[in-house]
Length: 280
Ligand SMILES: Nc1ncnc2c1ncn2[C@@H]1O[C@H](COP(=O)(O)OP(=O)(O)O)[C@@H](O)[C@H]1O
Ligand SMILES: Cc1ncc(COP(=O)(O)O)c(N)n1
Image (cartoon, protein in one colour):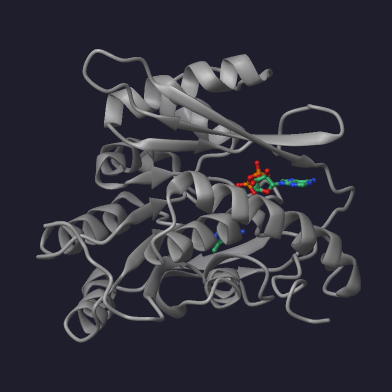
């Protein structure tokens, strides 16, 4: 069944892991939802002892409790969009898939295929990669960064925008999903370019839209990917097209990265300032 929004303020759910320093995961997603005029809800897939410098420990809830959290939300609240972040293990992927497949109404789903944190620590065990790939067809939009896209495409990491497009087209077609290939990790000089690729329709090639913004010179990139995917889910719930949502989110992210210099959080990769545009 297709989803229709009937509320002035949409209900948006994140299913993700935590960051006690507030920069990534669930905590970042809730700030991002709020910054994009939506009501944020959260289901925790994993408790992560991490900070701006790295990941120390990961604790998974029992899968029955994860299901219970998911059902507690969907039994009571009409959900207008879902963002999925860190899934961690194949068991978690399967538990979320079972819940999702059992829903009567499927709201727009943004999947951020989280695999490795900015610090370089793994957030998805290697044995769960196949399970995550098997989940992708459920999403409307996926938001891989360069290494995540390479893994989904079964290829080496892209070094150029052309290679990124080729990989994103292959993944979009294989899973019938829109792909926002994020270019933050590509060496593209003073601009950062993200590419939105739609799967090929019958008889026509995949469509590619390019979104460039000025590169912000900062170390504070912890949680950028989480925040972008959450923002896209919120805007989609509000009725934006993917193209309009990506345009809006790129502009917001530039300000959030610039505004991060006003924060003083940790000694590693600090968080972004989600509310840079609201605090005048
Ligand atoms: N230094 C930067 N300046 C401006 N935008 C950036 C910068 N780094 C990342 N972004 C943007 O932030 C988002 C996250 O990008 P990326 O770093 O590629 O993903 P991830 O955080 O998942 O590794 C993308 O929309 C990207 O364009
Ligand atoms: C719980 C959780 N989820 C995702 C990330 C990735 O964050 P980044 O956007 O920095 O890659 C993270 N560090 N922690």
